[in-house]
Every structure is written in structure tokens, then in C-alpha cells.
Image (cartoon, rainbow, N blue to C red):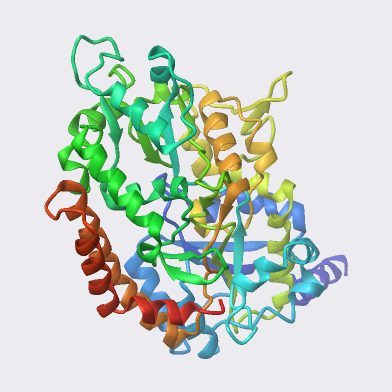
Length: 493
């Protein structure tokens, strides 16, 4: 009789709501080998939320694209997409096909943590909403996003007896002093004053001229209206600066070809190599310079002509397309309640660092470090326990926790990111346009972007003399290519 009762109880448990594990599928792009089926992350999330998850990763983009294409045609075989990596176009196609559901009516009831964040920052909700107010997917909220920063070699400035530049003229004088000086002490004249890669990086100098421009080459005029950045008078001053830097040897002749100098790239590959770069434009100095010289570089936040410090917010704090619930999910609320834990510091730390004293430890000073011992490496921890991968991971970035990492280099870069973020701004919100307008804007941006880059390179290298007439002829070429139409698309955004 007891056996029958036990069997009946087990059967009832299986049939009870929530007894079956939530099935999630997603794209895994991490370079470490991570098996979702055995990942401790999902086990720990179950302990945190009380919700079991059966997870399956797709490791090839081609296979994932096929999965999404099948969902559009009605072949939906999972409850949710986790680390979904959906573009806005994919979101629209999937929700219009009925493969994923509108989450807008479900967030407030099932996601108190995310709801509180969206209430505090209503502009974030604008980013995740589709044009008609539906919400197809949920985001990563990254308040400590990696910024593109202009880094200047403070150690070299000190060796030259110079302070941090505060004007474009002071910056030019400092970089000019670095040309030909043996600042790394290796007996060679192998220093590169400004080691930048192509016009894209050079455009990060625009804030020093009071211009914040995006990838559309759009900026805001004095009255706050959208303008095509090259039309601004200060933009010509920026182009003239690049030409001056080429003349003075601050920029190398190959700076406009899209490749860093061979010397700089060689130096970044080994800490045994000497520093060769005076000014770098990058998310972190160690992408170009030797990693052990990272602390020598300081973020260069110079004021523009009006005395204010401005910067371009490159990625924004909200990265969309990270989590979606499918039409096959029997309990969408459960899926959202599970995910909502990742919008807390506790859940975020699970994704980024794991569990204290199992994956990381905190010392007496409050700094944390991964518990790798030569047998179990940091990559092992990432593979076994962690889940964070760039902008595809839904949830919250635990900024305050990351600032306590036991790494001077990481903290130095992160603190610079936060300083830049305080003055960073966006020209237009992501997804400000409807689908048709966005398609046209993207086509115009592609054509105009090429013409802008080519024009800047011609002026800077002297292939075309920079005069009133030649600059106006270039602007007219851009107008004929549709610069005014691009501006009109974004007016009012």
C-alpha cells in the first residue's frame, strides 16, 4: 500500500504545474568549451529561483540561424531563447510569425527587479520596445559598458615634463614632442606618437572640437537638432588637425589604411616588448600596447571649445535581443520569474563570477579573485560555472562587484569607462526608426560613411588640398549622396 501511495505521489508531482523543467536554447559563442547541460550556473539558478531549467546550447552560428528560420515557419521546440543574440529584424520576424510572444503585459507581474529598473530608467524601456509597444525580448543592462577611449601615455608626458593636455594645441605639442624621442629607452626611434587605426578611430577625436557624432555621421547642432556632422564648421577644424598631424609626423602615413603599425602590434603581443605608442584609441590600452604598460595610460577627457567635456556613448547601457519566450512555453510567467533573478546583484554575480569560496575568494581588503590553482584554471571556472558572454547575456552587470576585482589593470580600465560614461551621450536612440525608414537609413549610412572616410583620408594625406573650395565640393558630393535625406529620417528622434 505504501508503494502505491508513493508512486501516486510521484505521479502527481510530475503532473503538477512547474514540475517539468523549463527548456531553454541559445547561442554559445564563448571561446572556452562550455556545456550547458552540465553547467553549474543553471543548477545554482535553480537553487536561487526554485525553477528547474533544461538548457541546450547551439555552438555554430549557421546552426542557430537554421533554428531561428525553423521557428519562423512554426517549428518551435523550446520554451525560451537564452543568450538569444537576436537582431531587431529577427525579433520582429519571430514575434510577427507567432514564434515568440509579447512580453510587455507580463513584465510587471512577474519581474519585480527588472520592473524597478525600467521604472527608474524609462528610457531603457524605449530601447527594448518595438515601434508598436510590444516587447519581443529582454536585455542585458550594462552600466559599466566598455567605452572607446582616447588613452595618452602619461608616463611619456611626465618624462617630457608635460602635464595632461587640456586643448587641441597642447595635445599636438605633446605628441610632437614624442616624435623621435627615445621615451621607451631602447636606443631606437621607434615611438609612434599617435597610433590609431583608420578614420573610424580618428573620429573619436571629434569631442575635442565639441562634436559628438555617431556611425551615421549624425550629430546635434547648438539647438539640439540633428545635423550631418561634416556640415558643422568645427568638423573642418578636425580634418585640418589630422592633416597637420600627418605633416608633423604624429600620424604615420599608413594610419589611414586601417592597420596599426607593425611595431605597436608586435609590442602588444608580449609583456617583454617595450611600449611604442603615445596615444591609443581603444577600449583598453593593452589591445595595442604591452599589458604591463596599461597603468601608464590615462583616459584623455579634454574639454571642447565651450569648456564642456562630452563623449559618444558607443554601445549604450541596454543591449537588446538577449532573452525571448516562445509560443510553446506553457508558463511564460515562470520563465520570466527565473530570468528576473539575473536583474539582481546576487544573480548577476552568479553569471559573472560564480560562488564565493568555490569559484572566487574575497580577501581582507574586500578584493576578489578567481580560485585558480594551476590545476583548475580561470578558463575552467568560466566553462564550468559562469555564463557571461559579451552582449548576448540577459540580466544585469554587477558593476560595484567588478570594481573590487583584485587586478589593478582591470580596475584602471573600468574606472576610466565609468568616468567616460558620466559625460557620454547618444545622438539618437537605438531603433528610433520604423523598419522601412531604418532600412533606408542603413543604406544611406553605408554610402555616406565610405565617402566621409575617403574624403577625410584624401584631405589628411594631402591627396586633396584642404581649401574652402575643395571642402565645399566634398560637402556637395555628400549632399548628392543623400546626407540631407539621412538627416530628415532622424528629425524628431
